[in-house]
Image (cartoon, rainbow, N blue to C red):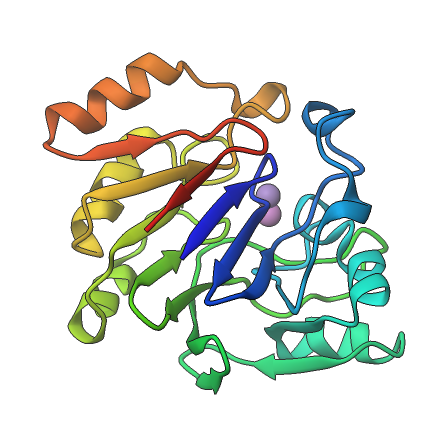
Length: 226
Ligand code: NI
Ligand code: MN
């Protein structure tokens, strides 16, 4: 499994040659300007945690270009299906098996509406059980006890957690989240993109380190392999 960060909460995840893109927000992100070209991104599936613009802005364009299947909650899937795109709807607690592995839509504590005000269902996160590795993508969320359900069924190799505070968990709550999901290897997201969520990278990494955990912060276009 190869995970590439394209800024904010956008990740490309390659599992055995199949390309997943999570929460594509590239053309509206100042930080990815001249660094990431949406046209270069391949996608077989697009996973959307919730409807907010900083997670869905490029989903329609990317799906149209690649023919990727959009996977999200029922309302978000419907929204894109009405635009003529291919979708697979899930809802909370539900899982389905795809050619890349088993995907479960799990709870998140947040809100979810499209930029035009359209209702975007309830926000969520994803647990991916891939061929060899399992990961949790929290999406935008506050710390919630529901996270404790995840390790009862899935032994995680990586947790992708928001750490920017203000709209989601901050670093301290993300450390507790990493306890809840029983995964000490954390990839941070949802920080630095705009003023409200700027963080001190060194301080964040130190706080995780002091709890015996590893916080990774990938640069734009940087990858890690699991
Ligand atoms: Ni959001
Ligand atoms: Mn967000």
